[in-house]
Image (tube, rainbow over all chains, first blue to last red; front, side):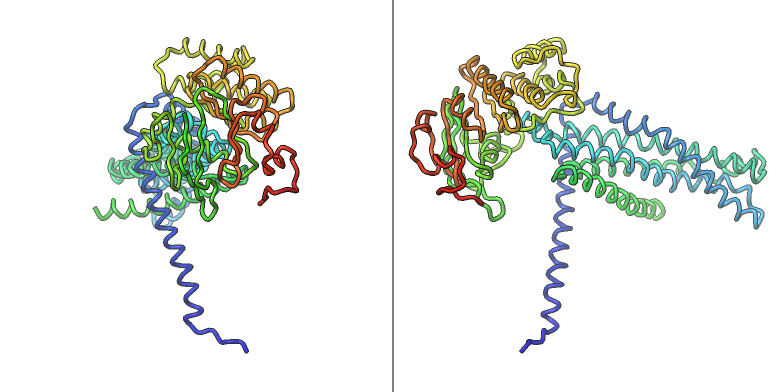
Length: 268
Length: 249
């Protein structure tokens, strides 16, 4: 005769599974914090790898310029069209440039540039490092007494931190340029009015708030992309998985951290 | 001299090394034999301090490296050269940059000196004038030889070869084996440790042979002792037969 299972029989495995999952998450967080500590230590340790940092700045920054300019223009244009259409209803279209500039500076530019660099630079970083991992190149580096954190991770993280604010600034500029064209040629807003309202509403602190986010986003992209690369295993499939996981994790982290920084900027 | 004193290494529930006692003499070529999964690669990772034993001690040139921290181990690893199974050359660097890598990282040599040294070791492995090529432009045998040149460039005291002839055709295998012998003969103090499945090569080039089985030393001795042994496990391994006392898992 089959024995009926009690509620505790059902609950125990579920609670155990949740517990294991939570322990796993806490363990991963702890390991990531330790990794950040090691990267920080290596950042200030010799040798200072100027050439590698410049190479990475070229890759993450310079080689991403075109895509940033293009996306900045189209996003600035699309937002301006949307906002302008609503403002026309109650005659506030002169505020178009100001609203667009504020939205770009504080929120859209850092987040969109972060997404683009995560997709382009972050994915490439993870793919490159994970390929090195599965083909024993990282082991070879360790065997030659070279710390992969110092040689691979630190230059990429520094380059990412330095370049993202510059890319965000470019995104701001082209986004606002697009807004100007939309305002002038679609909504017929006077040029002087456009810039006057913008100057009154958009403060340097707005631009600074966006650049603060860019610095943090740069660190997240560099750190997470390298981490997934170093943890990769299992050949070509492992490289693909590491790259996908890295990009998804970076995007989620950017969204979460963006909210947190926005909250802190508003509260403080 | 490299000594393993009662070294046990456990991964999860799998005991790879089981109270292993092993001596690798200085200035000789030692070949470590054993079927796949017997802990040969784990053994060389212990020698380099890339893995720590679960219990027991690893002593290299009289220094117990078991409890050393990472900065100490990094300094210690500078005396090693290693040839990896698939060469593990850095894709993003040219052949010359690969060979100069240990020199760039650990010496104060000028660029011209490093290039001269790279050219010298590349000539030693029979590959002159390829400094500007990239690893992806080389054949497997050439990659192995560049890997060997990289391992030799900084004049290591101990050189480790992880299955140097696996996947090579007989001619390239012969050439790699000859290179290993030549390199060892050129420097009387150089300790070479070769991990291999290749019995013919092992007995041809080795001064000292060690056979690992079930995480322990089944037999250690000269190539002649191996040729003459009546140990059924070693005879079965030499004969390459599935039937016999050797367990497969």
